[in-house]
Image (cartoon, rainbow, N blue to C red; front, side, top):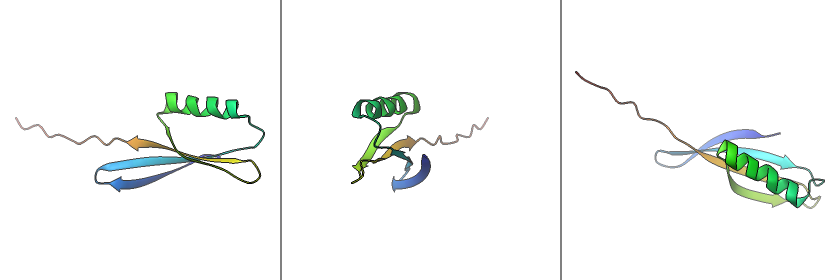
Length: 75
C-alpha cells in the first residue's frame, strides 16, 4: 500500500514521498508501465528502488510540493 510523507531538504522546497511495494510476480515491463503511469498522471518521479532478496520491489517516488505565496493588494 502506498504511503505519503513530507520532507523539506532545502529552504522553501518540500517533497512529498510515496512508498510502493510491488510483488515479485510483476514482470519488469509491468513495473515500468505502472511507474510511467504514475509519473505521467501524478507528477511523481523515481527517488529510489530496492529489490529484496525475495524479489519484491520497494519503490520510493517523490514529487515537489509547490506552495503559492499569498500576495496582498493595497488600493
